[in-house]
Image (cartoon, rainbow, N blue to C red; front, side):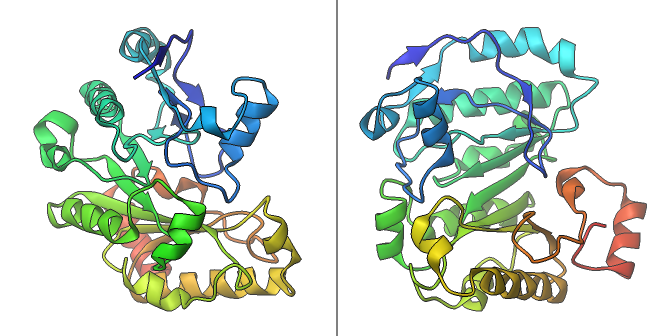
Length: 285
């Protein structure tokens, strides 16, 4: 597998529910075409030339060395580290990526830095070894449909939805915290589906993030786009309330963004959690 070198690795993320972030791979073999915002930006910056090049990921060879230098510098500022926003930490059928990711999680956890992880791949079962990887990490999958034909069209080389859920459920059953990103959720002119049925498959998770599909011409052309996403968001909120799941609706998804839930991944005390569950079961206000 090809490698690259970087001068820095840890950075403060601008994503509304994130803190610090790491992208230790350039490119992504999952080849999502919603379109993929990360790929578009890399092309605009001249880092990659085309889609074919994006599908050939390159590992940051000096990632662990950079962490050794940067952790002491940022440790007092870091609440948690997100893996990843412009690539996938458990890239399907790329064991080299998974191995590096596991080493990074272990290195961060060694300094008591929590990791929030998101993948369209499969989680290695070794993550249940909490003495090595820590018990406070949070593991998530992207999951927007139950239709595998839709997945093959928009996420052609990622793991199947069924395998993703199975992988996440395994971690949940072993006592780890799990979450799901239901984003980017497609409009009915791309695929007609039952959101409640989709949510029913992930009722075991601790947190759900929901967001609309951006940068897609067909999605924006859908009649009543705003009403559709507003209603979907309300459906997600009600589902989470009924199942005692924390929820974050991405800004711009509802007509009025009145809920402030940026702190969904901030570690909370038992007292605060009990207060939240009493006053507003599904939301962190």
